[in-house]
Image 1: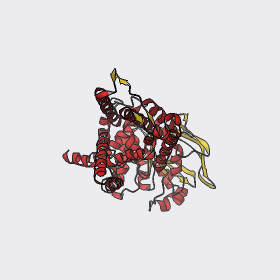
Image 2 (image 1 turned 120 degrees about the vertical axis):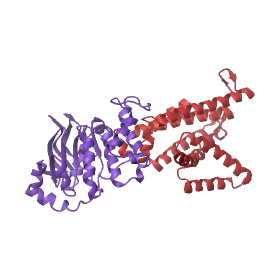
Image 3 (image 1 turned 90 degrees about the vertical axis):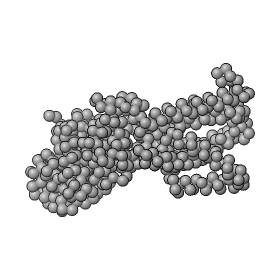
Image 4 (image 1 turned 135 degrees about the vertical axis):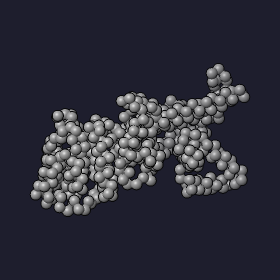
Length: 260
Length: 226
């Protein structure tokens, strides 16, 4: 299977700070990749470069063979790379169901903007929203406005919305931050179960090494803007360099860092 | 007039759709004040006196006389109803659903793959078309165009209606406009010298106690009934 995401010598500098340096990698279809690294190591910068929030200083990003370097987040999203956010980005005044309908409606837009019920792949947005609510176990919250939802549920909704627009690559920025320790595995099971059913490639940024070890097939370890290790989860997590720079302190205390 | 409103909205929208909140408000007010200034300084259009609109015919019925005035009234009601129905349909469509979403979180809308600026622009064009149509009916009904209607206080009235009624439904501003008219007549009759004070006081109360407007009362009741 060919690479769905490919970066060549991807570099981003902010003044004297190098947030990403010569990142060249290829990610195959239908894989789950964990991005690890301390604060400021460049994980979120990498996500922002791929999704178009930041324009690289040098280098290129290719998605399914097509160059997407410098395109707007909207264009990149429409092509099939979608993301969730460390701080959930939802529509606070809309209900959980309406939040999903916004995303599902955008997919249906191309097939008639003024329609209220356009079937996409044989399902109306209403039906698809019901299905997603069930899949993410959000049914009991479906009529509640997003602003009153608990943090873990907002996190789930944020991920569900990203998935509503049918991406081929889903990037999750710290899906378990702000979620209690006992809910973390349940959340990851739920998310990856829902995502993997569609054979979506997943890249997730994570500080919790237990989560990484359990869910990632491949791990990219970031340190000072570079990828210092890349390989199978167990292999990377046991490397001396990774243990020193990444796993050491960061695993014990997941620290919040500003996203975007 | 409706067509010229649409055209103005389309052109100005390229600039206005880039701005939000106070910048958007100030910029759109600036455009209306430019129009006011132009009208007031154009002797061909009657300067501060405005100009008369000659009574015409609507579908063969002459506008002058009682029959004509009724015809105009019916036509205005009909257009209001039809535009309200179209807007209601729009707000329930895939595209229309983006409007409240944009109000909540523009970043997320872009990251779901839709263009915020295009939606804002489209909304602006629709608002301009409706305002143009409203202006046309007013001119026909009064038989006169007063440059005062381009003055910022006229815009203020529409803002007042929006605050009073809330933006929860297409029906809300109709109720809000009727209430504003009632309130103003009431205030005018009982406090002819300080009526603005009464209207302003009511506005303050609405903002303090019903930040989502009067329509939120209906919605709460509907939510309880459901």
